[in-house]
Amino acid sequence: MSNVTIDNITHIYGSGESSVTALEDISFAVNDSEFVSLLGPSGCGKSTLLYITAGFIQPTAGDVRVAGTPINGPGTDRGVVFQEYALFPWKTVLGNVKFGLDHATDKTDTESVARQHIKQVGLEGFEDKYPKELSGGMKQRVATARTLAYDPDILLMDEPFGSLDAQTREILQDELLKTAAKTQKTILFVTHSIDEAVYLSDRIVILSSHPGQKKEIIDVNIDRNQSRREILASDEFEKKSAMARDAVQEEIAAANQTPT
Ligand code: ADP
Ligand code: MG
Image (cartoon, rainbow, N blue to C red; front, side, top):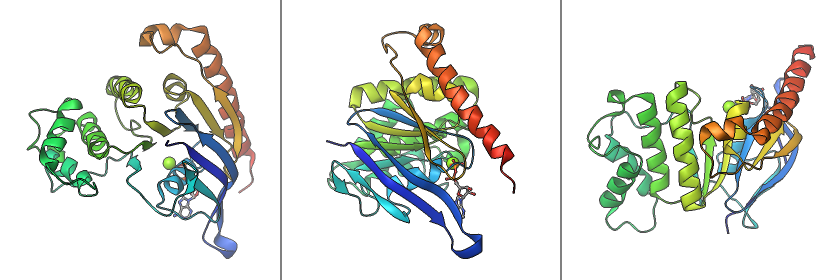
C-alpha cells in the first residue's frame, strides 16, 4: 500500500512580522495507484506542500502519512522529480541515474539496473553524455530514470514539464501516463497548467491563492484507452477543464484584489 494522507497541514515560513503563511489547514488523500494533481496559481503553496510530503520541510502543523504511518523525513518510498531536473553537471547520464541507486537497499548490479532505466526512458546510447550535452526533454528523462531506478511506490513531481516546449511536453506527459499505468505508482503532480492537470489526473486538488487552502477537488473520469486527440475532444475533458479554469481564475482574481 502506498496511499498518502495529507492531514491538516499548515505551514508558516519565518516568524514574527516577516512570517508567510504558505498553507492553511490542508487535508486530502492520494489513494494507492492514483494520479492526483495539485493545481493553483503561482505562490499558492504547491511546491511547499510537495516538499512537506517528500519530507524535506517539516510542516508547522499537521502530518503526512504513507500507508497510515507518519513520515519522518525523506524516504525511498517517495521519489521526487524537480522542475529544474536537479542533475549533477559533473556526472554522466549513467552516473546521474546510478546516483539514485546509492540509496537503494539492494546494491547488487546497480549499473545494469541504471542502464535498463536509461533504456526505458529512450536514452540508450546517451549513457556517457553530460547534462550540458542534452536537451531539456532529455534531461527530464534522465531525472525520471534516476527516480524510477530505485522504484519508489510514490512519485512526487514539481512542474516537471514546466520548462519544456509544447511538443516535448506532450510526449513526456504520455510517457508518464504509460509508466503510471504499468507500474501502478501513486503520483502527486504539481502543475499550474489546467490542461495538463485535466489530461493527466484521476483527481485534481485546487488550492486557493495565498495562503493556500483546499478550494475544490475535481474528479476526472477520462477513458485512458483513447488517443490524446480523442481525450482533448471529449465532453469530459471540456467539462472538467471549464470547472478547473473557473476555480483557478476565481483565485487569481482574488489574489489580485488582496491589498499588499
Ligand atoms: P507555488 O509552488 O505554488 O508557486 P510555493 O510553495 O513555492 O508556491 O510558495 C508559497 C508561498 O510561500 C509563497 O508566498 C512564497 O513566496 C512563500 N515561500 C516559499 N518558500 C519560502 C521560503 N523559503 N521562505 C519564505 N517564504 C517562502
Ligand atoms: Mg512551485
